[in-house]
Image (cartoon, rainbow, N blue to C red; front, side):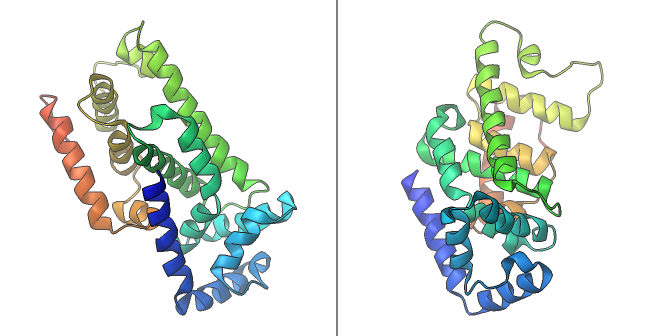
Length: 236
């Protein structure tokens, strides 16, 4: 986990140090007064993480989430502000991945998806809205794994099995089966689900995680190849 976490931290420091970041922050401050008065993006992050007033810290984070509907950099900033809490979740839920880096990557993908859902809204407690949502989804994974030991797969996943299912339902079923059978890793299944079913672009996921979109697409392609190899169906 330290390797991925440190890599993301270095990427963030590089982003925050760019001259254009001050222009970006000025534009945000003009759109939302809660971001006024900060000298740098690093100062924004330090305030959210260390402010003794939870209300004030969440106010600044709320501004970032609201602006992230139109600005992917605001989404990346919000993710960075929440990183300590997300790292703690990744350390607690071993079911999120096979190794620490896998677990953190899965947690970050879930957080990106939640921030995207909340983007444009003005929330009172955005930290809870994101962290609690990721925690709840990880808990559901744990419960499904326990249920899957004693009940059929579709019942454990909570997925109905009508005669004709949509492409999204079929893919979701393949991912659930692939994870259970061990033909695909849980974090790779989360990446496929996030981009193929939930509809978040590889570029969006890459920007939020601080990697090149090519990395995300390459990893997804390899994961899909492993998934296809374990089934008789192809991934669209």
